[in-house]
Image (cartoon, rainbow, N blue to C red; front, top):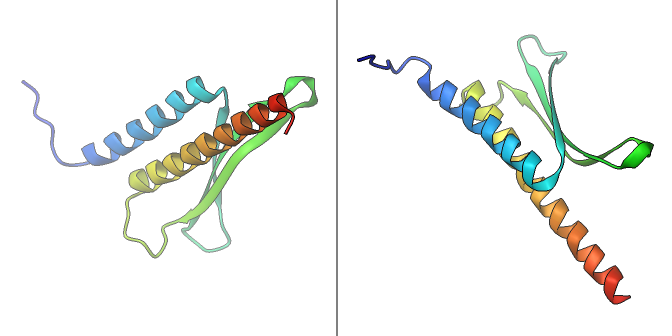
Length: 112
């Protein structure tokens, strides 16, 4: 029987949860996520950008939501937790965006 050590199991769980959150959101809302990790001008600090894009026909892509944040930052949080927080925030933004799209479509159908 293999025993897990505490080591980075928490980091793995956070990164897996972030992946699952994005994958589920892609299926439900029909968006595609793009994550990028960029260097900042401050040594040792990274910029994480999480974008959700909705394909809109032949005209290209439309951003449904976008969030960016630097790590490490003033909060004491591991990178795995930071990644999960970012993905969770963008998924909630996409949920709100999708709800507003549905409300707009319902208003248009009613002629309001």
